[in-house]
Length: 209
Image 1 (cartoon, helix red, strand yellow):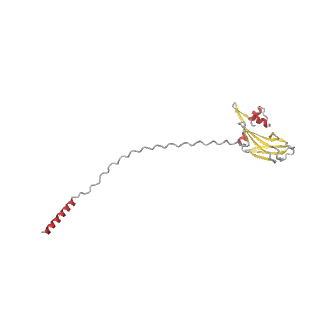
Image 2 (tube, helix red, strand yellow):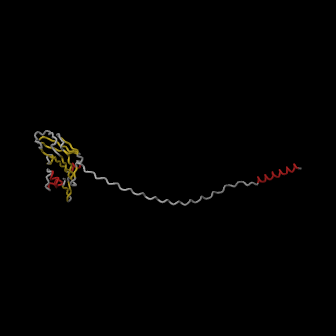
Image 3 (cartoon, one colour):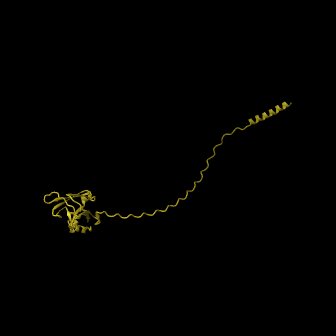
């Protein structure tokens, strides 16, 4: 009888397990994805920083000094002075960058050699030390050549040192426009009675010295 009762209990438990297993609900399918949330509000830009203080201006540099050769004068005239005491020989060449192609083509270039505080225009015949010789001048871009030739036989003359003190080169703008006409500077000087062979008259006319 006891064995039967145990069997009956086990049978009832088995029936309960089977019933529970049969009644289990299967997992449902996944639901639809919900809509995306709205974007958040954009944050406010930060405040710009204040500008820095401007630096102080630098000190202006000093004006450069004039070149040792060029002197101030009329706006249309330039004068260059070269020491000549140590020059010697039958030919002397000076580098003058201001003798450009334009200057040589259009402007007036005058040269004067100084002897005993008197300026003589060259080319010219000269006799500063007892020998008469001719000073010839040749100009090319950037250079001025001086050559010395004896008058007696046209041979080269070797210029002694200390013969001349200085050489002055005057570059004058060649033309000006008056009443619509182009007038040569030399013509203007001649009409004004300026003797271009006399350096002092040229200097006074252009206010060079």
